[in-house]
Length: 462
Image 1 (tube, rainbow, N blue to C red):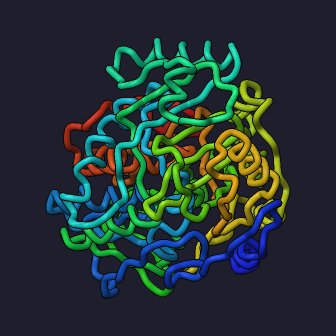
Image 2 (cartoon, rainbow, N blue to C red):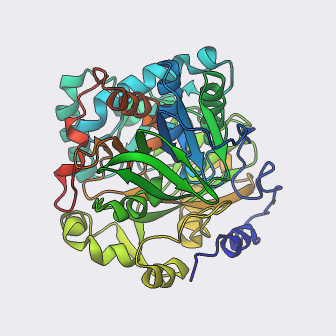
């Protein structure tokens, strides 16, 4: 029984109930989904081969294609629906070093460097701005955890420090939060998810990459055990290398090759507001909400206090890999059974078989959005007269250690995996794309790739 994305999209578009006036906006910009995403004109499909095929049109796949094309490597990107239509357009839009796993810090520092010059380099608007991030802390335990992270991050020369309640008040005037201290990273930034991946894809196309949308990959072809091509609906494309950058689809794409990638879907619900006068310019997380200012003067709001994991067939397949995470984070993990649960049990994976036009568009979790909105308005009075313009949800592809896989697969020559970004992929996407391209081209990696190897997992094979 296939996952019915159309019904989920209709559910997401239904009017929400809030204790304030609610405004609905037209959904999609020619794509028919929420949130709104710029559309990229695809390359003409000829079936011509390429040196490298990138599977997945999110920010990771688009960035990889851009950096490969700039090297003069022939590359074709295949996306079953539209560029950036899943988690790459549904995230918070943060580009942060603050609070990251220390294994990711070199990669996010490279990404932030690339973000700052991106718009000038590609002649497009990604919405990137340096705004700073603020992780507000209300308890002694939270403060201790933040200081422990700072101690680990010091060796990377990260621009972050703990600030006092008085300094918080200077950054966020008139707030009503019970915030003792905060972790402040002034050099962190934000960008617009609906603009960034399409802008990067368009730049990759201008650099010589072929961008094919509406082309669902149904299989990876081998010859003598090595990559030889990719099968798509109604055809194939020959190549000597493949990059799997398929987000929540990656594990299912790798399984027929005998590659075990422990990866599970987590639902993240988000809303955006109408323009808010006098709102904070710094992005804020903590106190039961997250917020960042948008280019249109509104704000993107998330909850961030819990992880809601979908129960799918892979929940049992990879149970042993995820047990340590569940043990450490049991206070914040919730399990959710829904339509995809039964579909995956029938199909044996996490999602439906990819097909042209299919988009994972789950309905937002009302309880999370309602809590985030209530907590935000209690802490920031500027939002009390704001309206909710739109809400949506996405599926985050999470690994057992919440760190991505950016790795060659040694058992299948020509195969590289770049996925499992665990909700961190948007901000880190440019650096991750460059690192992935380095591995594919066998160049010196921009950062050490060893922490991201697939073989670190018990069920992983590389």
